[in-house]
Length: 418
Image (tube, rainbow, N blue to C red; front, side, top):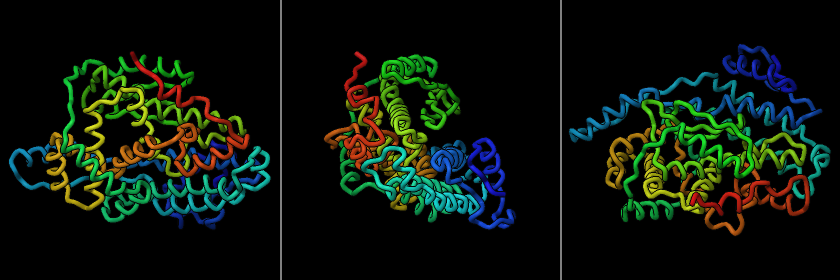
C-alpha cells in the first residue's frame, strides 16, 4: 500500500492501517511506502505532518496507567519511613515503532521535492532552499523521536536518551539558581479556590475576543489545561480524578498562560496565509517546545499574573526533571523535592509526569531566554524556536514572503486585569 497524501481523509485511514503492521507484512519497497506528488508538494507534506503529529503525540501515547495506586504506596512509604521504588505500568504504544520510523524517514526523503521554484513562487527573499527544507525535515525528525520515546518508554536507558534529544537539560547555572530560589522560600498567600472550569470559560473567551482571535474553548475531564493548535482548540481542565477548582488569581494567570499558546499558533497560521503556505508555523516546527512554555511564563510576569505558588511549582518541576536526568533514584528524588518544599503528593506527581516525558525543565529554561530578548516579535511569528525566529526575522525585514505577526507583544505583554 502506497500512502498518497493528496487526499487527507484517505491518507489518514491508510496511515492508521499501515502503522499497525510490521513493515515486512506490507510487502512493499520502502521508498514506495509514502508518496508526495511534486505538484502541491507543500500542501501534501502538510497533510502528512498533521496526520503524523496527531499519531506520534507523546501526550496521547505516553501515560503511566497505575499512577493512582503507586501514588498511594509512595505516600504510605513516606508516612511509615519505608523505602519505595515505583513499579510503573505504561500504556502500550498502539503502533509498530519500526514501521512508524520508516514512514517518517520516507517523508523526510520526500522533502527533497521542495524545489527552488516552489520557494520563489511563494515570494521568499532571504530564506534559502536548504533552510526551508530543513523546517519540514527536522519537524519529521522530531516526530521520529516522539515515536521512539513512546515505543521504548519502559526501557529507562533508551527513554532517557530520547527525552534528552527532544528536551536538552538546562545548564548548571539554572540548576543552582533554582535550588537557591527554593531554599529562600516563596511567600505564598492563602487563596480561596472556588471557581470551576465553567467559570474560566467566559474569561478565556473574553480575552480571545480582546486580542481578535476566533478560537474554540472546550472543557474536558483532564488534569491540566492545554492547547491543540492543529484543532484550533484550547482546553480547560475540569479534573480527571476529581473536580478541579481554581482561585481568582490562578484563573487570571491561566488565562494569560494558556492563551499565549493560542496566539503563537494563530500568528503562525496568519503569516502563512500571507505567503500562501500551508499553516506549518501555526502547528509544529522543529523543537519549538522550550520557547512555547518559556514565553507563557514570560507573559505571566509581564502581566503581573504570576503567582508565588505557581512559580515555586515551576522550580520544583525543574528539579524533578533534573534529578531524573541525573538518574537519581525515584525515592531519593522524592526526598530531595520534599526537602525543597514540595508536598509529598506533589513530589510524586512531578516525578511521575517527568518519567512519562522528561521536559519540565523547559519552563524555566525557556523563560530565561525570553526575558533577555531585545525584541519579542520574531518569536511571536508562530510556534518556532530561537534559531528559526532569526531566519524568519530576516525574511520579514526584507519584505519577503511573510509579514510581522498580527498579534503583537503590546497586545500580549502590556495588559492588566485591573
